[in-house]
Image 1: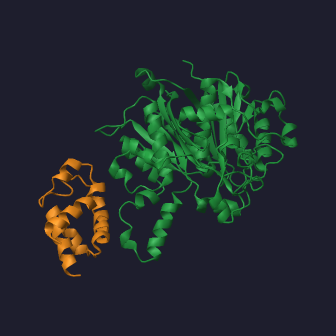
Image 2: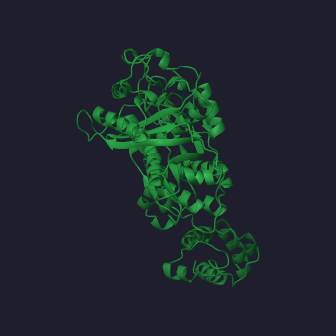
Image 3: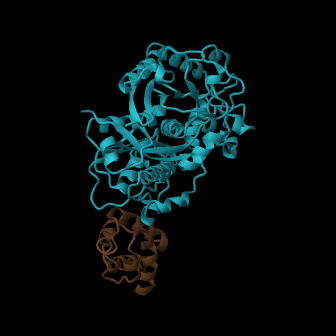
Amino acid sequence: MTREEILAELKKVLTPYTSNKEMLNSINEETDLIRDLKINSANLVDIIIDAEAKYNIEIDYDSADKMINVGSCVDVISEKLGQK
Amino acid sequence: MAKRVVITGMGVVAPNGIGVPAFLNAIQHGTSGIKFMPLYEELHMSCQVAGVPPFVWESLRNYISEVTFYGLKGTNIGYGITVALDAWADAGLPYDTDEPRWDTGCVFGNSAPDSEATKNVITRVDNKEVKKLGSRVVEQTMNSGVTSFISGRLGLGNRVVTNSTACATGTQAILMGYEYIKSGLARRMVVGSSEYIDTYIFGTFDSMRVLSRKFNDQPERASRPMSASAGGFVPGSGAAAFILEDLDLALERGARIYAEVLGGSANSGGQRGGGTMTAPNPAGVMRCIDESIRNAGIHAGDIDLISGHLTATMADKQEIQNWSQVLGRKGKDFPMINSVKSMIGHCLSAAGSIESVASVLQIVHGFVHPNINLEDPNQDILTIVDPERLPTSMVKKEINVVAKANFGFGDVNACIIFSKFDN
């Protein structure tokens, strides 16, 4: 999967967790999940669980800690997909 | 000086009506909300009927954000949010606030957290899938789940507490809110209770053989308080909420006032003197009612209507005996008495709050709702109460004072005196 493809799919994963739909439509690699998308920090866990199910990957705790903005999410997902 | 406490908003989700207008219509017409439950037959329950509100889950989108709605599964939480927010709007108050509402608190109860949500945890953990539980489970399995959703949505900043005293929970929640405002610690309280009886809660009562089992083929006739053919209670689910306010605050803002909470009492029979884990000590019940009357500053003769606990078990007769003895009233002098449970079953923790909504509606609209299914009154009850005090169809009548009581496992009692508001 290309980074663009992963980003497009990631947008779907993020959808139920943000009320800021306008920002979600215009996300880029710099978009911060908590600051920009106003996602409740507790929900980051749910996003990781949903991403694991969506891509059939396993995201370890250290990798999960890196998933702060859209770019780092794509990095981690891309890396885990490469390990499959 | 002690504050006077009035009711300015109500919300209800009951098996026979969702929303105050639908519930009012149902109790005036004696509409039953009891239905046959095919699942309970499949599960080999002895009782196969229940009162389940015709609740539309999607309706919650009108009350909470999409983000909160996504992942919400606890049915009792859905009921609780609905009734609390309906009551809030009914009191003429806006939902949104940037600042916490420091003068407003919440006492909201349930007898158990949602056991279907708990089952999800057990299944995941046993399957070694702890990591898949996610962040939304704790909030829905903790005892204070319902209260937390309500207080969060409304930004309540005063005391926020979850109470639990089995079937006395709802009545006690109202009483606790009343006492808190009366003492001047809060100016407004959201109070009530919410209960969803799923198969797991239902099953535990079914096993005790305290549920109705002879009317599975006639669900609407299954809940028969005070009748000779009463053979156990019918489980019900639902919720109700009140907005209680300090009278000065209600008058200042020109709020519509439904009724006044004059007083009440909560106690325990100590599981002594005939009281056990499951049966009330009559001395405790009578003391609770007597204290309520004293706290309310009324006389036993002032009570126009008793909204009883009256579940349709052997205990109905003892309850009537207790009322009669402590009030010193019998025969034609006994107050009118009715049981909402004849229409909706026994909603456990939610019984007290739903039945209190019925109590207030009877004051506001001047009527006594029917006891449905009371075709064959218990003969022992008739030796205490004249049959005309046990209405089987609606009676239009001015009602000034209602005594509402509920009694719960653990030998706990709660009683409240509601009155027509008169300034």
